[in-house]
Length: 203
Ligand code: ADP
Ligand code: TYD
Image (cartoon, rainbow, N blue to C red):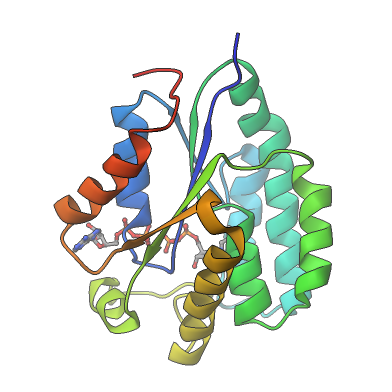
């Protein structure tokens, strides 16, 4: 049996990546997964990670994200891929590089080394970055209670977006950048065109 594909969606908050990731998972009968918080341990980690009333050092935040990821890879992602199931993942290690590295200023070389420890050889086959203007994202974001990241200032989100674009440049054709400021249908059309050339196991 061949190993499943690992497709990752990345982007700043409210870029529309969860909408597209869920749609693609359904379309291709793939397993939908997300970070942080997609395991019993992850549920607890996510609660602390998003709780804006618990201040923590950026390094602590990064290590909790990486703990969640390590456990997720071991208990959810690798087992599914090993069974030949395609996996569509809403956020992966690039989120930590963009948010904790570019956004919070944690050393990028340290984060990359720790990422290797967390994910081993579990690399995505393709990462789709939904890039969006900060003002457009802000308009889409719910106006109610904000979590630790949603309550961060505009400069933080600008650094995160810039970080993602740097990473897209670095990873070349292993990443695909989509302009997420357009309608859901237009974004979906670009994504589906790129995904048509992948060797999906199902669908
Ligand atoms: P993310 O996972 O990146 O935070 P979501 O997919 O949850 O983003 O979308 C955030 C909000 O924006 C949701 O209310 C969603 O329905 C809406 N949305 C998603 N894509 C678009 C789009 N292309 N145009 C307008 N609104 C969108
Ligand atoms: P998520 O549930 O994906 O929120 P959204 O739907 O708004 O994208 O992620 C929760 C928050 O966690 C989000 O603001 C990004 C942040 N995050 C990091 O800072 N580092 C990480 O490694 C991950 C996976 C998420």
